[in-house]
Length: 265
Image (cartoon, rainbow, N blue to C red):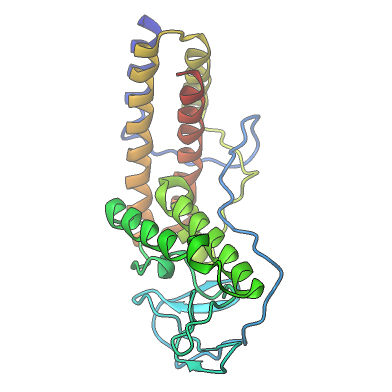
């Protein structure tokens, strides 16, 4: 318990500290890969872009407006040929046939959410459950094999989208990717204060055997994760992307620590 108190004090000393760092250390960040690998089937038509709007976001070679949840591309139904003004997700608006995955539909658009880091967790969960009901195998069992396969792919994408947007770390990495900024998973941290804290944290977690002590450590680590998450918001909204990347790399350490604690509980 004394070690836990000492660790809490160590963590609190970094609450307002913001150091710069560069690659070359023995500690590597391990981030979450939020990109989903889907079926190779692609039978939808390529979308055509509309007129330019401010603050474009790029993902998978397509463009999106950061101020809207609508895509800037159209799609044509593989079954009836209906031309939709926006990329179809799940059903055709005309014949209601299940559509193949369209990679121009990003995770925020699936849940009809604004493309921003802060979101309503309750609203996200509710929309996820609604999608799962629509994509339940019992509701598509009378469809053709082709449409059942499409539904399975859609369901997998919805699940991956939900998991990505639920966690602070993976959500931060994803929204950075939408802005064309990829976090280097191999870049390392040389801030000696942070590295010492991480070493002490890992040692404390490894030696802790009492669930109460582990809960105390986890509470402090989660608070630290939230602090760096808040710092990421400030940096991202100000378009200080280099600083935002540093925040993500620190969030990675605390996310990993939380996972180690959960394993021991």
